[in-house]
Figure 1: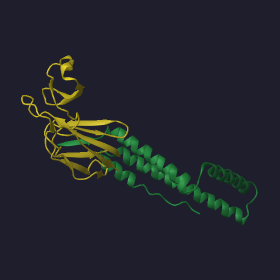
Figure 2: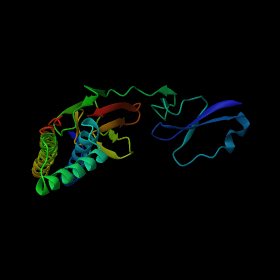
Figure 3: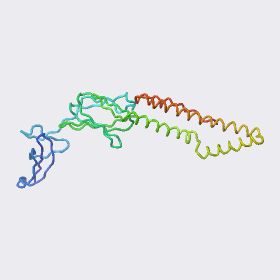
Figure 4: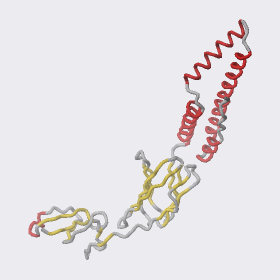
Length: 137
Length: 113
């Protein structure tokens, strides 16, 4: 048995396979998917250059927050800095209600009119997801 | 760039007003130890003494009791008037900051003892 990883043409690892080499040809691949003879973590690894595939750890997300507690008055703000452009930013409250946006600048003011505990997630492949909790009181 | 967690102003105002009403109810019933059964007892006693005062007369102690009940009623009416004032301020606010300022302006007066 050998370990294989399937990745798409973005370099994202989409699944892992453990199979005998002579059975590899039976593995179904979708359009744009390729296979590499290497073990990879679906969450933390990627293939930077699909033309020359090497399993590589995804880079850390450079996003930082200046604070994690804000007043929910529509004025006070937490500032997310270092956000990669075009990242999808999601704020989810404890009820699952979601506020989302796409980063057009690297600095984003997070403002709350509604008190609650929010999970902020910043996603842009190949960066690792950034996640933190903000308390709006 | 700004990402704001918000909802329509009317919803923010309604939420603040409902929260204020709940806080006031808790202040009266729990913080001030004035549950509904005590309010009912006081109302009954007020009616009883008031009728007695009109039909016959009341003792000094009973008059003192009437005065005390009157002060309790005045206290509660003050709180209800304050609630109405803050409600008006909440409904005329146009930002969350103004709503919070209105809510924070509520004056909780202490129950006479």
